[in-house]
Image: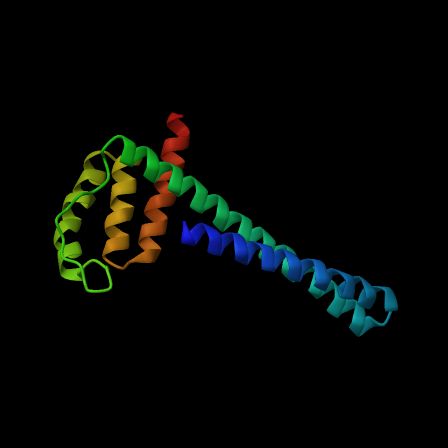
Length: 147
């Protein structure tokens, strides 16, 4: 729940930033001065790109959370017995030991969104966020095809 509040707060702050910056950007463009027009245009374009990136990340998070809830309801989330550090993170050596089974499941069933999502959880536990996100995106894409 805390993560959702944090995301909502950051999105609200970003929206406020865009709103406040928008007025100044339009004022710069309206001056007609070449340098001011370029700066004003950049002040409009960069927040639009940022808003697109934020929207894309929120959409990814929502879809991944939906798949996690669905897989949890089915009893299909990984439940490996792994040691945790005092901070609550998975001990990397335990995550690495459990990983081959999830990789093998994806190789056996490459069209299974469930196998790909479990692999993304294993990657995340091992600390490989880039591959975890890629596997989650694959799971989302495969689930969308079957829905």
